[in-house]
Length: 213
Image (cartoon, rainbow, N blue to C red):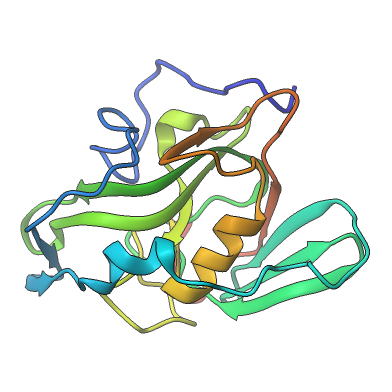
Protein backbone atom coordinates (compact mmCIF):
# COMPACT_ATOMS: atom_id res chain seq x y z
CA UNK A 1 0.00 0.00 0.00
CA UNK A 2 2.91 2.36 0.70
CA UNK A 3 3.92 2.54 -2.96
CA UNK A 4 0.38 3.00 -4.26
CA UNK A 5 -0.56 6.45 -5.56
CA UNK A 6 -3.71 8.01 -4.13
CA UNK A 7 -4.53 10.15 -7.17
CA UNK A 8 -8.21 11.00 -7.57
CA UNK A 9 -9.80 12.50 -10.68
CA UNK A 10 -12.49 14.17 -8.57
CA UNK A 11 -12.27 17.99 -8.38
CA UNK A 12 -10.44 18.96 -5.18
CA UNK A 13 -8.73 22.01 -3.75
CA UNK A 14 -5.25 22.17 -5.21
CA UNK A 15 -2.62 23.89 -3.08
CA UNK A 16 -0.52 24.74 -6.16
CA UNK A 17 -2.29 24.42 -9.46
CA UNK A 18 0.75 24.24 -11.74
CA UNK A 19 2.92 21.70 -9.98
CA UNK A 20 0.29 19.22 -8.84
CA UNK A 21 -1.49 19.13 -12.20
CA UNK A 22 0.91 20.22 -14.94
CA UNK A 23 4.59 19.99 -14.02
CA UNK A 24 6.36 17.32 -11.99
CA UNK A 25 9.71 17.72 -13.75
CA UNK A 26 11.54 19.05 -10.71
CA UNK A 27 13.49 21.49 -12.88
CA UNK A 28 14.32 25.11 -12.02
CA UNK A 29 13.20 28.05 -14.15
CA UNK A 30 15.68 30.93 -14.67
CA UNK A 31 15.12 34.68 -14.62
CA UNK A 32 11.72 34.73 -12.95
CA UNK A 33 10.13 37.06 -10.38
CA UNK A 34 7.89 35.73 -7.61
CA UNK A 35 4.64 37.35 -6.41
CA UNK A 36 3.35 36.98 -2.85
CA UNK A 37 0.87 39.15 -0.91
CA UNK A 38 1.00 41.77 -3.66
CA UNK A 39 4.81 42.02 -3.53
CA UNK A 40 7.27 41.25 -6.31
CA UNK A 41 10.16 39.17 -5.01
CA UNK A 42 13.47 38.48 -6.72
CA UNK A 43 14.23 34.77 -6.33
CA UNK A 44 17.51 34.39 -4.43
CA UNK A 45 20.33 33.10 -6.67
CA UNK A 46 21.52 30.98 -3.76
CA UNK A 47 18.61 28.64 -4.36
CA UNK A 48 20.20 27.37 -7.55
CA UNK A 49 23.44 26.63 -5.71
CA UNK A 50 21.86 24.88 -2.73
CA UNK A 51 22.10 21.42 -4.27
CA UNK A 52 25.89 21.62 -4.27
CA UNK A 53 26.21 22.82 -0.68
CA UNK A 54 27.05 20.38 2.09
CA UNK A 55 24.52 19.92 4.87
CA UNK A 56 24.73 17.70 7.90
CA UNK A 57 23.26 14.27 7.26
CA UNK A 58 20.32 13.79 9.58
CA UNK A 59 20.37 10.59 11.59
CA UNK A 60 23.96 9.70 10.68
CA UNK A 61 24.99 9.40 14.32
CA UNK A 62 21.91 7.59 15.67
CA UNK A 63 20.76 3.98 15.67
CA UNK A 64 19.03 3.06 12.39
CA UNK A 65 15.24 2.96 12.61
CA UNK A 66 11.98 3.93 10.94
CA UNK A 67 11.83 7.52 9.75
CA UNK A 68 8.75 9.52 10.79
CA UNK A 69 7.91 13.21 10.44
CA UNK A 70 5.49 14.80 12.92
CA UNK A 71 3.95 18.26 12.46
CA UNK A 72 2.26 19.89 15.45
CA UNK A 73 -0.01 22.60 14.02
CA UNK A 74 -0.88 24.35 17.34
CA UNK A 75 2.80 25.07 18.00
CA UNK A 76 3.82 25.29 14.31
CA UNK A 77 6.65 22.84 14.98
CA UNK A 78 8.04 19.92 12.96
CA UNK A 79 9.80 16.95 14.53
CA UNK A 80 11.69 14.29 12.57
CA UNK A 81 12.47 10.96 14.23
CA UNK A 82 14.67 8.08 13.20
CA UNK A 83 13.55 5.23 15.39
CA UNK A 84 13.30 6.78 18.86
CA UNK A 85 15.91 9.46 18.13
CA UNK A 86 14.88 13.04 17.41
CA UNK A 87 17.00 14.23 14.47
CA UNK A 88 15.27 17.56 13.75
CA UNK A 89 13.03 20.04 15.54
CA UNK A 90 12.17 23.27 13.75
CA UNK A 91 9.47 25.90 13.34
CA UNK A 92 7.26 25.76 10.23
CA UNK A 93 4.45 27.78 8.68
CA UNK A 94 1.26 25.88 7.84
CA UNK A 95 -1.93 26.92 6.07
CA UNK A 96 -3.33 30.40 6.70
CA UNK A 97 -5.59 30.95 3.69
CA UNK A 98 -6.51 27.26 3.53
CA UNK A 99 -6.01 24.83 6.42
CA UNK A 100 -3.34 22.15 6.33
CA UNK A 101 -5.02 18.73 6.66
CA UNK A 102 -4.37 16.58 9.71
CA UNK A 103 -3.87 12.83 9.67
CA UNK A 104 -1.29 10.24 8.65
CA UNK A 105 0.24 10.63 5.20
CA UNK A 106 3.11 9.28 3.10
CA UNK A 107 5.48 11.19 0.84
CA UNK A 108 4.66 10.06 -2.70
CA UNK A 109 7.05 12.25 -4.71
CA UNK A 110 10.02 14.56 -4.12
CA UNK A 111 10.77 17.48 -6.49
CA UNK A 112 13.99 19.46 -6.46
CA UNK A 113 12.02 22.52 -7.62
CA UNK A 114 8.49 23.33 -8.63
CA UNK A 115 6.34 26.36 -9.39
CA UNK A 116 3.36 27.09 -7.18
CA UNK A 117 0.61 29.51 -8.14
CA UNK A 118 -2.97 30.17 -7.12
CA UNK A 119 -5.38 32.54 -5.40
CA UNK A 120 -6.89 35.62 -6.99
CA UNK A 121 -6.88 39.38 -6.47
CA UNK A 122 -4.91 40.39 -3.38
CA UNK A 123 -4.49 36.69 -2.57
CA UNK A 124 -2.78 35.83 -5.88
CA UNK A 125 0.61 34.15 -5.59
CA UNK A 126 3.11 32.95 -8.17
CA UNK A 127 6.20 31.28 -6.73
CA UNK A 128 8.71 29.83 -9.20
CA UNK A 129 11.55 27.59 -8.04
CA UNK A 130 10.01 26.48 -4.76
CA UNK A 131 12.80 24.22 -3.45
CA UNK A 132 12.89 20.75 -1.87
CA UNK A 133 9.25 19.81 -2.29
CA UNK A 134 7.90 16.64 -0.67
CA UNK A 135 4.29 15.99 -1.66
CA UNK A 136 2.27 13.83 0.74
CA UNK A 137 -1.11 12.14 0.42
CA UNK A 138 -3.38 9.45 1.84
CA UNK A 139 -6.66 7.78 0.88
CA UNK A 140 -8.69 10.81 2.01
CA UNK A 141 -6.37 13.58 0.79
CA UNK A 142 -5.23 12.49 -2.70
CA UNK A 143 -2.14 13.49 -4.63
CA UNK A 144 -4.24 15.93 -6.69
CA UNK A 145 -4.82 18.03 -3.56
CA UNK A 146 -1.20 19.16 -3.85
CA UNK A 147 -0.15 19.34 -0.19
CA UNK A 148 3.57 19.26 0.56
CA UNK A 149 6.49 20.16 2.77
CA UNK A 150 8.77 22.65 1.00
CA UNK A 151 11.18 25.51 1.40
CA UNK A 152 10.02 29.14 1.41
CA UNK A 153 12.16 32.08 0.25
CA UNK A 154 9.30 34.64 0.16
CA UNK A 155 8.85 35.03 3.93
CA UNK A 156 10.72 34.40 7.20
CA UNK A 157 7.74 34.34 9.55
CA UNK A 158 8.19 30.72 10.61
CA UNK A 159 6.24 29.72 13.68
CA UNK A 160 3.09 31.36 12.27
CA UNK A 161 0.61 30.21 9.57
CA UNK A 162 1.69 31.72 6.24
CA UNK A 163 0.78 29.24 3.49
CA UNK A 164 -2.14 28.17 1.33
CA UNK A 165 -2.18 24.71 2.89
CA UNK A 166 1.37 23.45 2.48
CA UNK A 167 4.01 23.32 5.20
CA UNK A 168 6.66 26.02 4.68
CA UNK A 169 10.17 25.50 6.08
CA UNK A 170 13.47 27.37 6.22
CA UNK A 171 15.52 26.38 3.19
CA UNK A 172 18.47 24.99 5.15
CA UNK A 173 16.12 22.89 7.27
CA UNK A 174 14.05 21.56 4.40
CA UNK A 175 17.17 20.66 2.40
CA UNK A 176 18.39 18.50 5.30
CA UNK A 177 14.94 16.93 5.65
CA UNK A 178 14.66 16.33 1.89
CA UNK A 179 18.03 14.57 1.78
CA UNK A 180 17.04 12.42 4.79
CA UNK A 181 13.44 11.51 3.95
CA UNK A 182 12.42 8.58 1.81
CA UNK A 183 12.22 7.81 -1.04
CA UNK A 184 15.96 8.07 -1.59
CA UNK A 185 16.61 11.01 -3.92
CA UNK A 186 17.61 9.86 -7.40
CA UNK A 187 17.28 13.04 -9.46
CA UNK A 188 15.16 16.15 -9.90
CA UNK A 189 12.02 14.00 -9.53
CA UNK A 190 11.85 10.98 -7.23
CA UNK A 191 8.75 8.81 -6.82
CA UNK A 192 8.09 6.51 -3.87
CA UNK A 193 7.93 2.83 -4.78
CA UNK A 194 7.03 -0.43 -3.10
CA UNK A 195 10.72 -1.09 -2.48
CA UNK A 196 11.50 2.50 -1.41
CA UNK A 197 8.28 3.86 0.15
CA UNK A 198 7.87 7.45 1.24
CA UNK A 199 8.41 8.57 4.82
CA UNK A 200 5.29 8.77 6.97
CA UNK A 201 4.11 12.30 7.83
CA UNK A 202 1.75 12.72 10.79
CA UNK A 203 0.01 16.10 11.16
CA UNK A 204 -1.96 16.85 14.33
CA UNK A 205 -4.14 19.62 15.72
CA UNK A 206 -5.20 22.94 14.22
CA UNK A 207 -3.16 26.03 13.51
CA UNK A 208 -3.84 29.02 15.77
CA UNK A 209 -6.33 31.46 14.28
CA UNK A 210 -7.12 29.26 11.25
CA UNK A 211 -10.67 28.04 10.69
CA UNK A 212 -10.90 24.45 9.43
CA UNK A 213 -13.51 23.36 6.88
